[in-house]
Length: 86
Image (tube, rainbow, N blue to C red):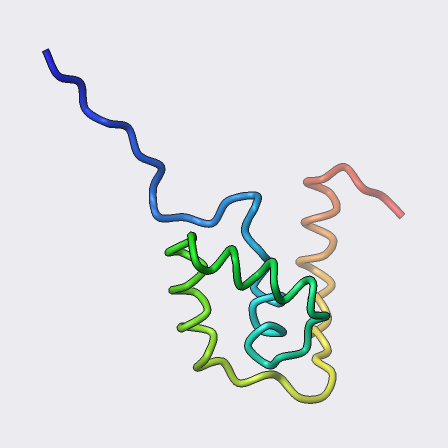
């Protein structure tokens, strides 16, 4: 009786570089040793290779992004649900 071969899905793993590292690699902004490691990883990781192609369409944000303030009523509700009190 043959058993099905178990495969790991098409996904990022703990050994994969972060998206920011892939962006830096694509922009040639990594030290040579780190870039070499990323290059070697890309040769064996279909997920990161695909992610790098996707990130090629990413336009880096310019300036500083300021998150909007949480409305007071929502903050009070969230803090009460989390058991936080001032």
